[in-house]
Image (cartoon, rainbow, N blue to C red; front, side, top):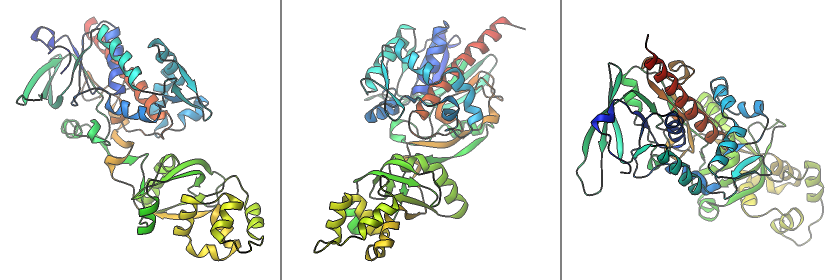
Length: 426
């Protein structure tokens, strides 16, 4: 545990934030900056674990695209829109600058810290919070709660190496819940909070995996030789005849397919699987070549070259892309015309997403009708929710993190307004 144990004197004066991910940290910052004592609790041994994990990929903070296009990336966009109007990409970058974190925009429009790491940003952020007087308590798992007159009773299970688990009970004037979704439980987002809210009558939408991989029954040869291999410079569509092909990268996994292109399409794929029991994706394995160009090259004599060598030399087509073609359309290689079509539009049938805990994020959570505009639970005055535990979703690319931070800011401001109203009296 870090920080100081809440004392009896401070218990009824403090605001409690439960969950020390980006949304919880942002909420704590807002409330503490307004002069209120904040106690921040997290079940894990250290804070910001999923935030640090995101930093392995460079810490994509947000995206620089047009505001309307940006908002349109979100499910439940009208719920998320007010958050992003208050704290969108520009405001996020300005906030990062106040921490001393310089950002840049990549060629894809994604925004990163110059250092492309999460740890320097988290370290500076925690320094700011401690200077504001925020007390951080790790290894505190929230296990129970109830409302009292003018306060909320909270119970935590406290664990520490070499010590017996004990129970801690405190009271708080206001509470922010920022407990994450249902994925990556090893980093703290285990969804165990659902039973506590459901018991109070809060309506929840079931968690579903998002930004996730999908299963496919590879042959043993494919699994043994190509699992973990990237599919670079390919394009993907969820409709064979659609002009909307997205160029990028994916990966062949031991269990199926994953990576950026798959994650971006995952919401649509999930919906179709839920509705029909299966779905298709379509690969363009040479997006920089037209069908006519490929047909022309394949029509040329290849002499004594094997087809594999011919494709490698004339089309730079080999490795994981060639293996995927042979796996999904083994008959296509016998006819040049059919082969060209398969290279440009290779179907793959999918039946299931990977398990919830493997997903980068989750859909589902506290439904919007349970919350007011300040993200306070309507049936629990003084209790606010933020982050991925709310029922919204977005693709990777900075959208997830931006909305988590924005919702934490909204909840933190909501706490301030709530306490000011209470202190003003009738």
